Image (tube, rainbow, N blue to C red; front, side, top):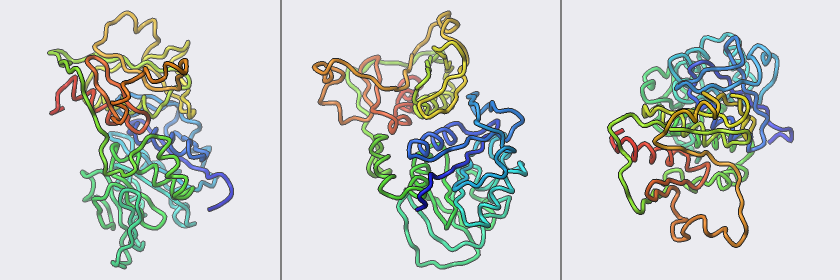
Length: 355
C-alpha cells in the first residue's frame, strides 16, 4: 500500500441516495482517508433522495485536475446516478481512473447507469468479493466484468456478468447492490485502500458483526403496541458532533417507510457538522419543532459518560448481547453498526412487519 494518505472522491447530486453517500464518506474518513464530497450540481448544497440535504466540500469542476486513489459513486433515483452519468467532468475523471489503474466503485443504480454507460464494465478478468471476502474463480473469461448493482438494474449491466453477491470486486472496480449493502461496500473499500487488518479494526469499532451474513439480535421486553391509525410523526434532533451515519440511516429508512420525519437542529443554524465533518441541513430549528407533538423522538448517538459506579445502570447486563433492545416505549441500539436494524425495528413497531 502507498505510504501517503489515500485521497477519495465521492460525487453527489440531487436525488443521490443518502445512505449510500454518507455511509461511504463516514466510514472512509474514520479509516483515515481524505474524502472530498463533490457536487455535480451548480451549487454545493445537494437535495438528496427523501428530502435530505447535505453540503458538499467542493464542486466537481474544482476537482477535475486532482488525482484520487478512489472515486466512489453512490446511486439514487430520480436524478442521482443518472445525473452522475450525465456529468462530462465526472465521466472523464472515472475513465482516467480506469486507464491509469486506480480504484473506482459504484453502488445501487450507479454501476449500470454510470459505469455501464461509460463502457467501463468490460475487458476485465473475473475476480469477485462476496461479502468482502475475496473469492478466486476458476472461470478465466476475458472480455466481461463481474459486477453487481440494485436488482432492478441488473439487465442494464452493459458488457458485464451480473452477480447477485452483495459486494463484488473485479480488478480495480468494486460494485454493490444498494442502501442495505452500503456498510459492506464501504468496508470493502477500506480493505482495498488500507488492508484487511485496518478493515477488521474499524469493523470492531463500528460494532459490526464479525460475519456480515450474521443478523443482529433484536429483543423486546415489556412489550406494548406502538401502532396507530394515523401516520406517525417522528422527531430526529441533530447537533454538531452528531454521528451522521446513525442519523442519516434512521432518517432515510423512516422516510422510505413514509413516516413523517422531522430533522431538527438544536444549534443556532440549520447546518450541522457531524463527527466526520459531513454537513447536514436540518428541516427546522428546535424552537419551531416545539410547536408540534410527536409520536416518537429518536436520538442519534454521540459520546456519553456518567459517574463510574453508575455505568452498569444504563442497561440490564443480561440484555447487552442484543444489538437492538425494545423495552416498552423505549428502543435502544448498540452503535453505528446497528443503525439499520435499529431503524427497521422502529418501522416494524410503528407501522407493522409488512411495511
